[in-house]
Length: 113
Image (cartoon, rainbow, N blue to C red; front, side, top):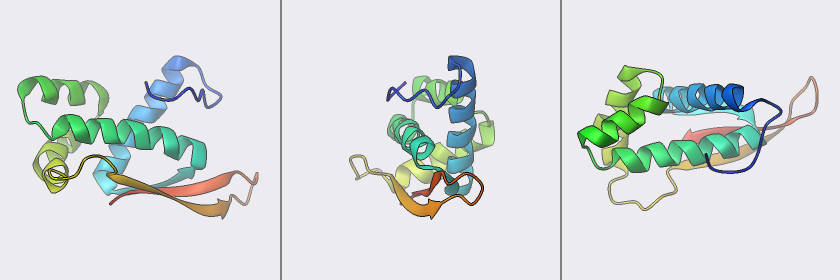
């Protein structure tokens, strides 16, 4: 996994959280989370899009092993990846939106460009 941020969780919890967040990002196109989580999600989402740019059975299985919904995988290969076919990285954008009201954590929006 990219990065060395542990996000205050065990390895299994962290992996499950990132899988869910990447799936939600690819499904909806935009999510709101903390800045550190957004940076980790950004790295994983960009890896998934890069893999999906080459539509082979092996790549579909690699993506299905990480993304938790089969419908999102189909959307990734049919709609999202072809849109970025001529682009070398930089598929997502992280925008800071200020502190969270409850605990003051720095919040950000991560979205597909």
